Length: 70
Image (cartoon, rainbow, N blue to C red):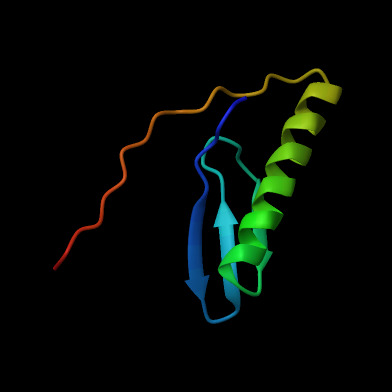
């Protein structure tokens, strides 16, 4: 199983997510659980589309994430 990093953000319109290793792969949702479900579906659909059209499926990049207090 391949795991991709998803970034989740809350803004004025609700939650959204994007997957840095899969450009254009995004999802939205009303709450955190909703956007995570949609992100999982989006990643699966994105990878399937790449495969079905004979395009390369990118390998996940290793990320190091931290919070910075100011």
